[in-house]
Length: 290
Image (tube, rainbow, N blue to C red):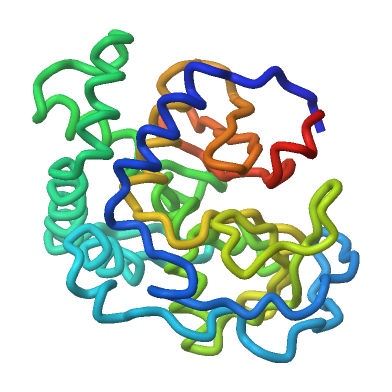
């Protein structure tokens, strides 16, 4: 992995967003997880992994809270709008478009997205008008594009990052969101295989809010997937949007420290749109850094 310098400006901003994220689920209160055992090594593209976790990752999630918080409820309604195989053209119905807009309206009311918008205006990366900002977010995240040439528009940033896709029935792309993971696990689509230990910390804690996991989904194995746990959809939207807009590189990696987590936030662009975005956990204890 490329060793980056810590980005202090973004670390400060992302901690402000973390503190402003009043919708975040609290470990041990709003949800509980069961980490079980460490995952084994699996080659990318393999359909088989030893299951070192006989139980699901999520023991409990407060579904009332998922339904009653506007941003979560709007987010969950988006998850079932996508055909998860790349190369299968997506059709966006007027109802789905309305749901996309309802979700953006909900997150734009939050303190997290207000702080994000203010920062982006200061940087001249977004316009001050809320409508312009909303259109910008819609284009970046929901505009359909073609991942597989000659097949028609089959993907968008939101689908890849938050829903997950499969490629040629051989590989899991995306699926970096804890709510989707939980819902898919509940429907017996996802099978958690175990955690990936980090540098200098042999085992994560049950209240860690960033984890590296191994799991299978629709018969395919994701050898390592990093994910925030418990955070609101607006928090992830904010982080990835900021990093996407600060650069025109195909891949942008920024090292940040959020709370006690040292992370690399990685954003791939697909032309003018988000290709994928995810956190990579480097360490979870400040003492590890020295």
